[in-house]
Amino acid sequence: MRLWSLHPSLLDTKGLVALWREALLAQAVLLGNTKGYKYHPQLDRFKNTESPLEFISSYLIGIWCEATKRNHSFSYNKIHSLTALKYQNLKIPVSSGQVQYEFDHLQKKLKYRDNDKYSNNRLFDTYPMTKIHHLFYIIEGPIEYWEKPIEQFMEIN
Image (cartoon, rainbow, N blue to C red; front, side, top):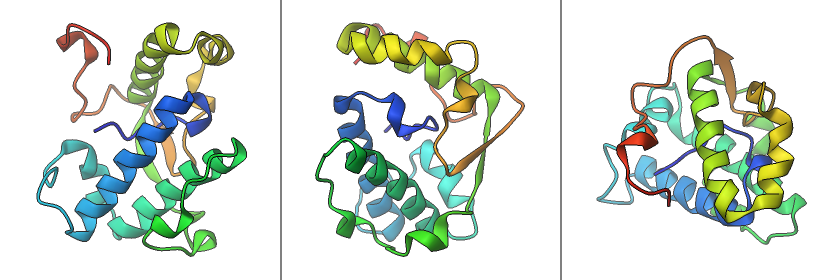
């Protein structure tokens, strides 16, 4: 499961669709509607909020907005809590090291998968912190404890 801290506009189409599916799965886990992924560490940042369903809804709304800009037809009705205005001010901290790690990881994927998106994203090489999902705010720190550095894996999916 990859729930990007980065702004969805940095993702290519394949990544955006995958993020939508992963976030919907996260929502299902938080609703108690699935047996798998219950203890996935990336869910901790949502579970540790005062209202996990509101926070995952806000996250999904951000993805839906980007998909809509790109003329994709993601179903807004799949978002459990539909009051978008209510969730504009919800914020979760994310470390600067995590944002940098995710950006580097995404760029490695895009270099092989979508060279145009890779090139466009290079504008943020020196400071990717300017392009994060609206749900997050940056604090100084290393990559998050739940991250599994890509160096552990032999190939990039």
